[in-house]
Image 1 (tube, rainbow, N blue to C red):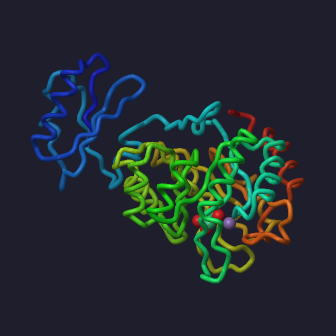
Image 2: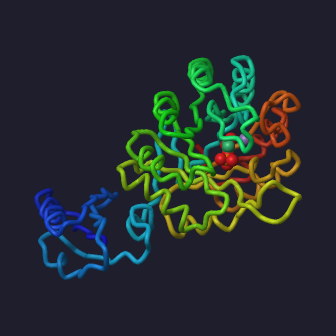
Image 3: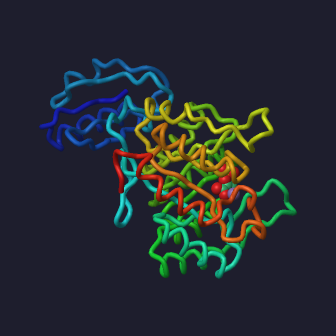
Length: 335
Ligand code: PEP
Ligand code: MN
């Protein structure tokens, strides 16, 4: 249930509602809105009677929430969530582009690509220091050394950094360096990792699990937000399908579906959906047209030599050309 307070409600009236929720044995989560405060009730095992709250001073409405996800749902918060970074915003028409290699391979590689994507107009540099690979024999990333390189990339280029945390240990390290912590498709249902990410004061980009329904994805986001971290960005990256013409099936319908159900921003990774370079840009254009809030793209200056995902990495010139095209694909908002 969501208890909506009058826009002139006093702090004492808000506190009284919180105290009543807690006295009932539930958890109260005040959500400050543009106009008024709403208070979410969590951990109640079944539906509550609105009469418990509607007569309290300062309360204008008590709305039963019909969806299993609460904090990330539109029923709870109608306005889009905007995530702020130094010098830019993400969400509600504020579009961002995150680009870089699949994995950090060396300082020279990272800096070379970072300078190229920066010159093309990207705002974030992506690159995994910790890589969750399908094969234990594949390149696993540089680990801590990779994070040091990412720090240097930020210092030298001014690009913000997004990089993946694969477990509790790497989460701690990544949180010290990254501007956005990425949680990958394989970890979308790693609930202990999600809870930990919910206790970190950094935005989290949560990739959709490769078999996840919209509801499962939003419930995963709910794990993060319910621990107190409301800065979650959803990322569609393609789901498993039967076709062999692409690595995954980019689910464009999920973009408007997320918008309908949730206030969280949604970005798209066309690279892992495509699996091959020639499909990446058509998918990126389609994702922009479908209304996503940003793109996460793999770019490599020497994709033939890349230690992971070279086949789907764009050449820097292709990326730069796409960045030129992007404003015409988005006549609306721009950072
Ligand atoms: C990545 O972004 O490098 C990655 C591993 O992606 P995903 O989790 O979508 O496979
Ligand atoms: Mn990759």
